[in-house]
Length: 99
Length: 510
Image (cartoon, rainbow over all chains, first blue to last red; front, side, top):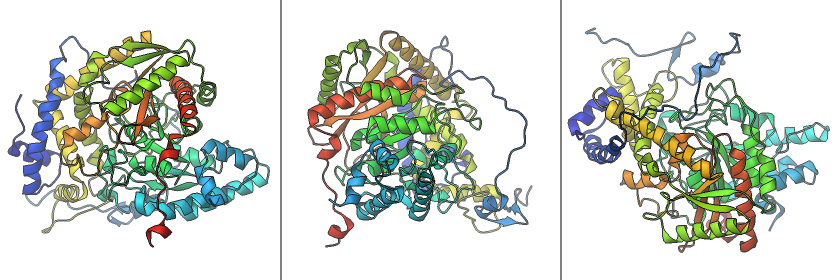
């Protein structure tokens, strides 16, 4: 199984939308490489005949009556936002100028 | 010893009795704990926020209702501390992260609603590893908590704040959350009691999610009976959590009371072969063996069970947890709540998100999100996440087979006693090993309890873990309360009596 190079960590950090400094990248690449090597042993016993489990207890879909309930207080929600305008969240431009 | 000090030493059950008998008011009890926090939390740092005014107001309200003859919950008026990963309306909630600094939640978690409805004053929010990722509280963005037994040592994690608050008599009760051991391991290293209920036994609505298929909230206390009382209050079905079990809880308090008589005739106790031996401190194993002898003496039948796939649990956990966390923490994007970092030059939302997360998340959170993103990425999914899910199946089968020959399973809660602050901070794998005995229960969804079983050779507390089948949480309380009674009979009182007295603010200032 491939090990985790510095370039690979930079690529994955990009996917995860986390800016890393060069120092962080150096350190994380070393640490993650050790961790990935250690956890990779799960494949030793994960043979094709074993079914996967995603959840601790068997679950079926849960439905409830479609009845309106009190929503969160809009003023309280907006008060906790980094920026809001006209009762809505204010966000930076979604698309860059090249788009 | 002043009256206030005496109040902080009582169990929640004893406080509840005094409150019910009107020997003491909730305002007095709550003030005593606020005073204790003011006295010792400079040294412990169990709390991120203390909500004294709100707690005293809630206490006064309970006292008024009691005076008016209203029928109240058994724990009404007993104050409680809440882990900072649980949202509290109007009270800052950070999950130990800089990215949520100053966030005031607009709603209460279901379990907080239940605490408030039952009249438990909330003393404040307790410290934790950032987003519950850690075993020492050293990954909190607000500084670590100190172990009351030795201030140079870790209080466990992630819920070290809740465990230390209870151990240092700053609160009689606390709420914890346990994703891989974050209630039980801190209980073990602080000489307190902690219970991870069956997955789905306590609502997850309003918990800031770490790994949704593993997270479970539960009680953090000084006695087994107190945990049962709190568990019955916060547990039970909640339609707002689709994974909540839609069945009544077993009779937990009754099981704890039954266990306290010390008779375990006919109970089969399974010792897990794979959770002892190499890596476990000799003093931890010695206390474990002595507890087994006490259980045998109480009539329990001790059998050895093998759970061969448990040796793969840690590896599976450190794939499943990061994978789920990487998804759950995607909501911290700097748009709707928490920190927003805006780079120069009219950046896009994507650039803002990356900058925000780069500055707002600590090292361990970055490490696990990147690990999880990697494990889920194209080309690696089957080998890592897919395999980990298969290991989960094998571990569940191990439990099923073991519970055919035993009613409960037991092990040491953690392989070692509390280590020194800083000792494992630069070695993530060594840190992860603290949870080797607690993780299997989370992967299988079964309930687990840790109670103190004595002091190791280094004079620090050791935890004894009891595991039961899913939805049979009552067995934890019966066996836990029995062992607690037998041990305290030998010690002549609770283990915490052996903990050093903490210097108060006044003395420390001299």
